[in-house]
Image (tube, rainbow, N blue to C red; front, side, top):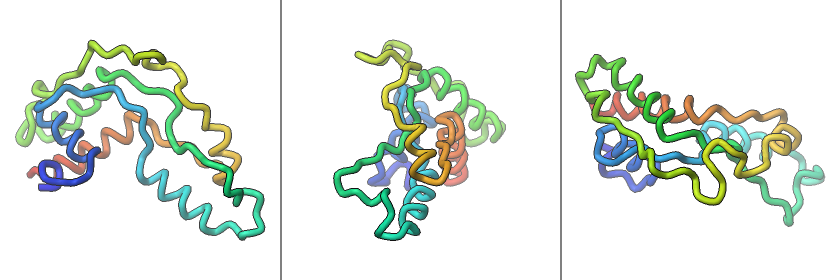
Amino acid sequence: SASSSSKSYSLTLVGQWIRGESPVESRLCIDVRDVAKAHVYMGKQPLSSSVWNEQERFILSTEARISSTDIAKELQKVAASSGGKVIDPNAIYADTDFKGGAIPIGEKEVDCADRLRQYFGGLVCRSVEETFKDMGRFLLIEME
């Protein structure tokens, strides 16, 4: 299965979380679907557009981490939706020791939401909860 043998760090990590092999960690992330949407939008811009500046870099991300406990709850709901047949929801647990380091969990780590809306046709990133819930759902389907 891709979740246990994938070269994708995120699939491997979330697979470990959902199988209860390691604690769920707080993460600053972006949904690959939002990256694809931004990529397509930029690809449609004419080269003369002001968005094409070689010096410009764009951060595609949610602006703040959510707690590992909140991510774990979303993954537990996903596991419970399978009736516990694939994964025991109680096997999923959060790393409650990490508080975020220099920037506490829940506080803004990057400032990008306004720029994403401005430069990427109004793009608003999916929530971290939605991203992990959907990834968990797809991993469970693969595990069945």
